[in-house]
Length: 267
Image (cartoon, rainbow, N blue to C red; front, side, top):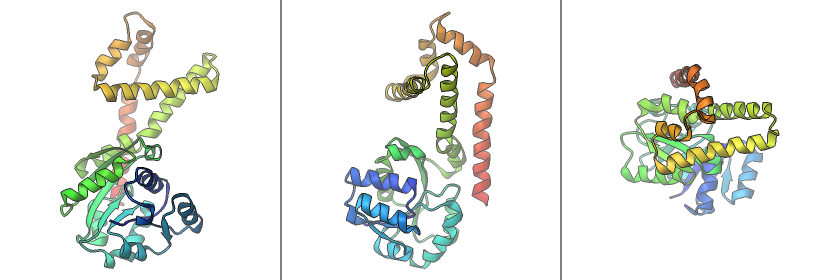
């Protein structure tokens, strides 16, 4: 199956790079379309894929289409190619905030349509991608989508009703986690740790904790208790967290992001 990318931004490149590196397909089976000549040349030189500035050409040549333009540009793009799309096309949209209904309102219900909420960690092979599918999407289509996204991280299928929460947690979540990480580094520097060393300690602590919990499936509450020996250093720090409004702040942070996601989906 030939695969076309409509848009060649960071997310598109992360997926394409994983596909080529993991030999999901050959470079000559991929066609990339972008309005930027500089970006097209870069993709051709870096990955040896075919490139074009003509979206109609991609639709004609490819059965699987990854729509990776900015949300504000997607309606113009899809309007330009909608008459070419039919039952043979599997369209995978990674445009934030664009619902299945909104997309089908432009391209109709003939193409098999999948909506994906990825995150930036795709670019290092540790992404989190959640997808939902239109009714005409087949089990084989879903398998193809999971294989494509799985090359660059974890994949989960959820009903579209959960996508505002997904956007807040895993889509926007990397920025929130980095914000807390930055605060920890600043606090360590205030305790006279050199900044470079503080950053390494904080980052590796975050990575190690996440990998441990994911690999062991440990209960998070029990893990916290296991690290926090009575009257020890962890217990002293946890006492400050528990006396603070940190849970409320995190809840409000995700709620605000989810609310904005709902607003964008109605725009």
